[in-house]
Length: 247
Image 1 (tube, rainbow, N blue to C red):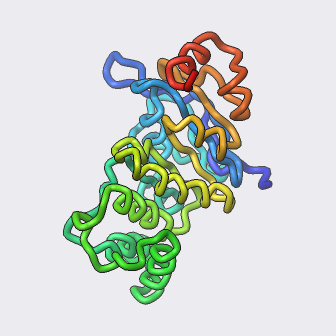
Image 2 (image 1 turned 180 degrees about the vertical axis):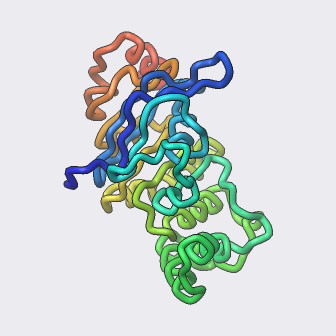
């Protein structure tokens, strides 16, 4: 494992006006780590992911990517995002583009790859994840699960150093959740470095190298999945898990 973390956060603070959303958050993610963020809605999970992708400007603290500070206001977020893939719960596919064009846009326009190279990579990934027959279709012709798989492929087409997943199954019908989690499971077992916010506790236990419980904008507890989910140290973690885990 590399001595330098892929992503390191120290003392991160984020506010919206008077409201503190993230308070003194520190997090280290090494190569191949899969860090699952759990917690109630409003606990700060999505905001933390957005800060890592520089979609939100932080108020205090430091974020480093491969040892380089990226939270400096002088850093170009577009250049940083060349190394980070992010998938949202709302898919965010371009409706006027085909699945293939959605997946090749960033490799061509941001990474400077040729159309033939970008399309070859995208087609391989789309076939791998069961979308080979849908490459020429527009997103509105796909199911929710297919759209989310296409969004994952789009993120993977740039070979990101870090993959951020924000509640990517939250908007799906229950029967579609499994097909999306299957892809994330395959990526996790394949060594992809990920930070994901999720409500899927059984999935977090299976794939995570570390689980972080957030409450009130703070990481209250962090550790191996079995320890955090089944033998938590903190009362607030226990209260949360009593509500979300089957009895």
